[in-house]
Amino acid sequence: MSKQNLDSRVFSLASNLFGFGNTTEKKSIQETIATAIATTLQTENRIMAVYPAIVVEAFAITMDKYRKYISAYNFKTNAENEQIEKHNADVRSFLRENQLNEVQKEFAKVFFYKSKSLKPREYNDNADAFMKDYGLILEKKKIQTVKYATELVFQNLLHLYNSQLMKRNEQYMKLRVTTIRPIEEFKINSFLVTELKRKGISSLDLCTKTVRNHRQRLEECGVFVEYVFKGQNRPVEVHINAEILTVLDLKTSKLITTENQQLTSENEKELPDNNENTRTDLNECQMNENVKNISHFDKEFPSVTPSYLFFTGTPASKLQNSTEVAVAKSVKVSETLSEKLQNLIIHPQELAVNLANKEYNNYKPIDTRYLFKEAYSGTMLKEDFRELVIQDFFKSISKIYKNTTPFAGSWKKAIALYMQNKWIAFTGEAFNKAAIVDDIQQMRWRAEWARKWFIKNDFPPLFPYEYFDMTRKTSKEVGFEYTKAKWGEHLQGKAKYEALKKKQEANAVRRKEAINHAKKCENEVNRFFKNKITMPQLFDYVEKNLPAEYLEKLPQMIEKKSLKINEKVSYVDNDFAQYDFSEF
Image (tube, helix red, strand yellow):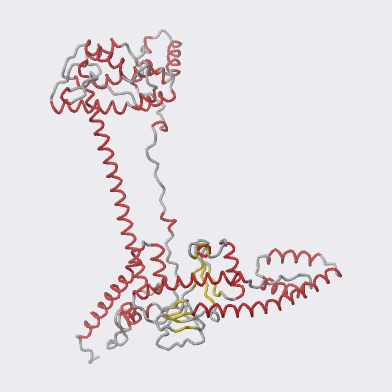
């Protein structure tokens, strides 16, 4: 039984990546990884090297070849321009001596519209084809020569290309890859050219549009070939003409050109073309933010006012006629929120009696939304609003006296004490309604804390006048003012909780990101070992889409993955070796 009968995926991976066609001649990890990175970018005129670099002598030779190439190109272009100028002169002479018919005029307009964006040589070729059918009626475009300024841009582009090659060489050196391979494409980012500096001074005082114009001129003249556009937000990819480019192979310390490079059959390997775009579109991962902490003022108030804001009216059955019912209903509908709140204020004596009679033991405070609305858009006087809030507070806190019987006089004194001192300035004027409403949450929290404290400790409260004495501020005096300290502690605890909550949320986000990054990196490494992407594509993906530490750990990840596959294939070989297949 031969190895071809094994699982096809296992055997293909073993034979292609690790050279297990002959198990007695197993390659090292370095050689197996090197074999996998060969790519279909290899062509007959592509420079081949292990660690290519454009430094010192290689840079000088490349620039010398560039100047010779441009000189020959400009000479040829000038000769073409002379022929173009002669042609244009003939066209102008023909147009002076002849009048164009309507067909020639209309078709000439269509040609200009369709061909205006073409490059000069392509435009001139189309013009020649057009004039064979419609006569000598079109002038050709003059072809621009390559100027000296383009040479300066090309020098800076070479510097960037060398930086790109050296960065990739560093990655391959970590992997100990020593197999010769085609030189990779040059990824041109015009912005990086404008940012190049020498000793803190810009190398070229150009804008990105000017750099793109020079790049296009180099494409037209053939210095840049195999142009690939991958989107406006990604760099364009080109190759430098092999007749011009010279590189230094850092592995052999030899200068490499297409003329002197020698390829052997051992170094040549064809693999399927893998041009998949593995870049993750980060714009799809963006999430919409939730709007939090909406103010009370932005909330919509219910169209129906709660029943506790209304007074019980005379039953309809007791009314003398339907006219009185209609009048009563119309008055009730027209009553505003400010008027309803105003009607809730009662005389202090009546309030004290009601408190003493325990009529508010199940009282529900006024909805803060109505108080906020009144504070910022109501018509109540600030003195009346202050009295309303004080009375609402005493009705709410009366629950702590469920099991005691304070007299109405003590309640009246406590109410008068608050009316004389609470929310009132030194001038005797009441605070504005906005300042009062801001304190309502604090007062209600303190009242609830006091109620729970008395229940927990089974301790009877002092009489109202003594309990609400504003000089009782310590815990031993058992006064309501001490609850201010508890409110402060509550705010501190709330702040700590919010900080802890934010920290936990941030840690959760970081954990999820770390898990996602690890999964993405693992997936791309697996795709590489399945021959779905090349090593340059793997490094590019990790560099652009994952944190920097993943790029540093990538060589170790590849090496560990290759060892696992090595062990797996070796196990399959040993498992089949224990059987005797001679009978077959």
